[in-house]
Image (cartoon, rainbow, N blue to C red; front, side):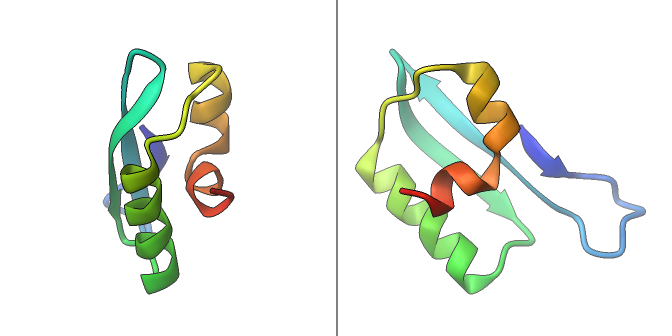
Length: 67
């Protein structure tokens, strides 16, 4: 899980990656821009490898936008 899921936030934006055997196999984003939603969809199709869940958690949405 990444982002701001606080319902009190003026513009909450959060998401999640599903990882299986070291690869992204799914992704979800709520509150993203059209560009960010496209990046999440591209990431889900590409199913890149993930070296560290800790790093992935810290990178959050930027992981998807850098694919």
